[in-house]
Image 1 (tube, rainbow, N blue to C red):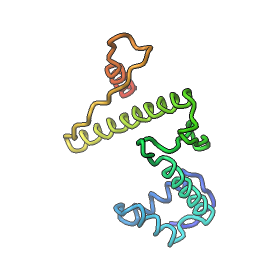
Image 2: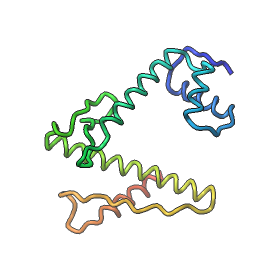
Image 3: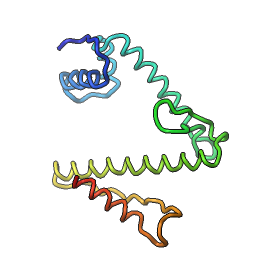
Length: 163
């Protein structure tokens, strides 16, 4: 396998990493995999440099996301995407806080979707799967009085699975 390449397209980089991982047994800690990739110069220096910057960015996100004494993050992004500005929670307006909570609820729903797909995969592969807790979807002022938002959410997932 050619260890150096000019194209740093993420799909190419991911393919090289996956192939290297599989060639080395397909079972090792990510830290060991990363060290081997750097030591064996599997990726060109520019890709490694950009990865180092992303690593520092990830440290910044973790530092800003750490909870305060009140148990809320110190800072959060004010939008979606990698270029979203981060802002200290003490500086948020009400509308920014409302949007933040809406994004976090959406993330919960997306994570739950992945968990359900993993559950299905486990069931198909092993014949059984561990129970997963029910996601309690919040109601909104637009919901009909007494409406079961969870049922609507589950129904949407079932339609998505059929498509």
